[in-house]
Length: 210
Ligand code: SAH
Ligand code: MG
Image (cartoon, rainbow, N blue to C red):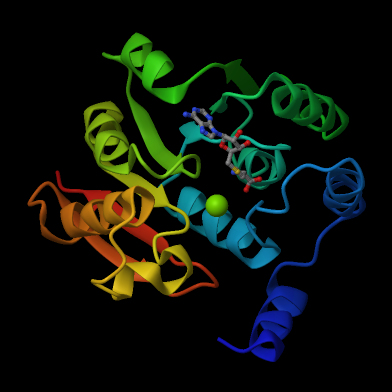
C-alpha cells in the first residue's frame, strides 16, 4: 500500500484525538521505540472488537498504551483489557496515558515476561487476544491464545509480514522462522478460520471456530 493510500485511509477513517497524538509525541520525544500500531490499525482493532461485542481482551505487548487505548475505547463499561508488558518503563508510561484517557477502570497492565504470565491466566476466557510483542515465541503465543479464547473469539497478531521477510525462504533467522510458523498455524490449524491482511506490516486475524 502506498503512503498516499495509507494517509487517505487513516485521515478519513482513523483521525487521532489529542490524547493519542500527545501519547505518540511524548513516546517519540522520550525514546520509546516507534513501533506502536498505526492509527488505521487502531481503528481496525476497534472494528474487530466491536463486531464481536468483545468485553474481555488480552494484549501481549503494551509499549506506551497506544493500541490499548484504541481497543479499550470500544469496550463496554464493564469491559476489561489486560495487557502484558515486560518493560517497567513502558508499563508506567502506558498507565499514565490510560489514566489520562479515563480508562483506568478498564485497563490493567501486568509487568512481566508474557510466557511467565500467560500460564497464570489458564482457565480464564477472553473474547479477543492481540499479539504484538516479541516474535520468537509466536508459535507458543498461538497455542496460549487458543487456550484462552472463547469459541467465536478473535486471535489478532501484528507484524505477521515481518517486513516482508516471511516471504523469502532464504531468511532463516529465529524471528522470521517463528513468524512464518505462526502464520502457517493460523492458516492451517482447523481450530481457526484466518486471513492475513496486508497492512503496513501485516495483521493476521483468526476467528476461533465454534
Ligand atoms: N501494542 C503496542 C506496541 C507493542 S511493541 C502498540 O501498538 O501501542 C512491543 C512491546 O512488547 C514492547 O513494549 C516490548 O517491551 C514488549 N515485549 C517484548 N517482549 C516481551 C515479552 N516477552 N513479554 C511481554 N512483553 C514483551
Ligand atoms: Mg507491532
